[in-house]
Image (cartoon, rainbow, N blue to C red; front, side):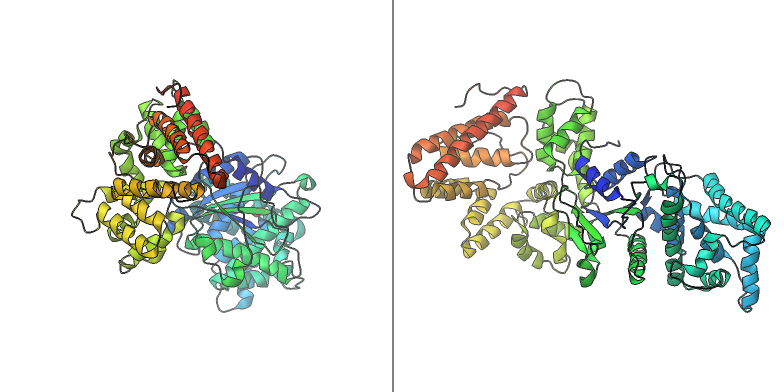
Length: 621
């Protein structure tokens, strides 16, 4: 099922700022690169941007991974053709943009010219520009070539007839000029003699050279022709003085070889403008989706031209040397998940509760949330048990989504590494298997809530006698933490290895000696210890320290479901009992205030879950 997420308006507004154009002071906007792991919502975002822009500004969206698999012979010119014809679709105020220079260059490139006699080759080009019959043949061939690429322009790409008609319209104009002016050299042809560089060359001679040029030189000239067409459209088009928005090019799969070649070609055209002393002013905003490979492939010098946007409202840099904008696509917020849940059409109450459960389960991972929402919609209820949901087949589908391209050996190591708290703690485990897993496979960026949850569940399913079973790995990490003098790590892994008694005893002893602020921070670090699937959801009874350790560990678990309301009341009561035990520590007022805040916070959460319709105490313990 295809589902659009509510929200993402911040990202839409960010792209809108790139589209804004001042006709009195035009620029070439930097390329905006949205980075995210697999299924992070990049394609959904580009699809939404495409739908919003369709008919409003000239725009086109390309699936470069699909294109690369299909186009093998000089793909870049055909991709340029697809972009040009996509941007030429009828659009309010803009009408239909023209790409005459590009079409003429592609026609010349396709000719079979005399390879011996330059004059004969020039006559062939001239005849191509004059003879209607030859143009018609080339028009049909070019239409077929362009259609190969246009098949991968999602959402309203021009059909074969439209493509052929667009090329034919240019050809018909050439034929008209031939009849009325005695020459086929309109300004779109004479451009090849000047190329906006002040040259004084015979354009037919240049077109012959284009026909015979190697692939890279030919691509450079065709990209320059494409850029010149865009600039000319915005300077001479009807109502162009009112065009206050740039064209929009959306590139999905920009990490592919074809994606990098296309973006590199556009940047090379920009550099050539700068080298000529021209302020880059091409009205084209490029938004690319990447898993990180596009920008990581840049040279050290090129990386200086990258500006990272840490938030959607970060001001865009005014420095013209910035040619890349990097934005790591954030996870969905709880409110975005809630708005999407409301749109599922499920009757009944509890939408807010369902959204909270799903957001804690997936961490806001767009692809994972999408998949889980489909399963919930199929059930038709807002009351969801995350553990049962995962066991119904959702866990396997999530695994295929996030881990489908990882080989078995690497996956085995990832499962072991999931026990680590962070990248630094995982690296020694990776090094043990460096023959099958590059260190880069385990980075902080991939250590997300949902991915780690899936890996931890696989770790828990290993048999007890497995050399890297759940308890064995956590015991090893506990020993390493103890050797480093890392108390939080030692207790965290002790709890993960089911040694709760030791953890409670240590925390209880330190409560009377540690600053309360430090003790609470230690507690927070310890209770994030993962729980195995099927573990009891009832906190162990006893003193407040034991209740806090067991109950906080449960509510921290992403699989904790709607029964957490009672747990929050138990936690609030335990914090209140803890406050009575420590008494009035005049030297630690900050810690006492933190305790009071925690009591109120968990009481509030308890009330929220009661409003969701679940049975919870009317008052705190």
